Length: 337
Ligand code: SF4
Ligand code: SF4
Image (tube, rainbow, N blue to C red):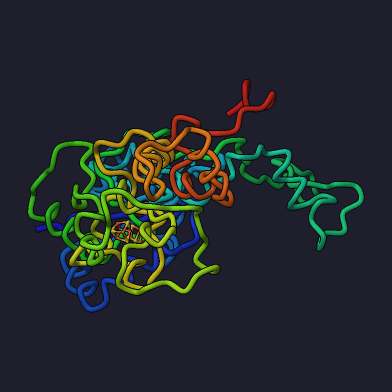
């Protein structure tokens, strides 16, 4: 019997999600026995034409990681959608925009300016020559994919069947997803293949998280010596555990928390949350208080929130591209994507 055909593709990301496949370790050999990898440009020599030559739905499962930043990535997402029965949005950048999505606080012109222009101290480019989509050379025409103004999640470009969250997805979740699909099971379309509980609900430190947290200010991890057992929020550190899905370790207790670092929200929001940043700000505002005072004035809450360094980057670290804000609006963004 023919083995199911599987493809992997890498869009705008750091490459960690490709590593996450290799992190299956010896299980990768077991999986590789059961599937026929028909496209994985990062690991094997496949050409785009190989995919173009396939018939519709020829690939059984395709995993796309990374956000959509360029014309090439958008074209490949569309092509792979057409050729795949099941499309899995793999990892935080693909699911919610991830770190590349933070670029939506800028536009293409300012990004080019900081990469190729005078605002980049290591660049000597007085004529401000930037990458062109077409360049004529004696040998013919050279082309480069256009750089979009806005970073998008995969599902803002094509229909997605399932999501595997995380930066990067935990190997056991990836293995569970592959085994589930290979066994012929089909969860409801749109399912996020990770636990629905919030990280706080599974965190080893949850018993030390008080209902009301008395904070005078919000601190950065570099400013304090953290107790390795006490809830990080209770220590004045922003930890996105209250609104983030658990599942980043097998026991669900939190990969970063184990290293005494706060959660930054890479597993994406729990189902009840529509906008990560707004929900987290609201969660913090509802738990901070002052010793001996029943109600805290809005002014005081604002004063405490003002101590957060880089609030937009903190609260929308992984989710800006799929937030209500989605991107910083500017004249250029209004009429161009
Ligand atoms: S806020 Fe962070 S440290 Fe505290 S219980 Fe939740 S996940 Fe754990
Ligand atoms: S603790 Fe939070 S940021 Fe760290 S891996 Fe888990 S979900 Fe991601």
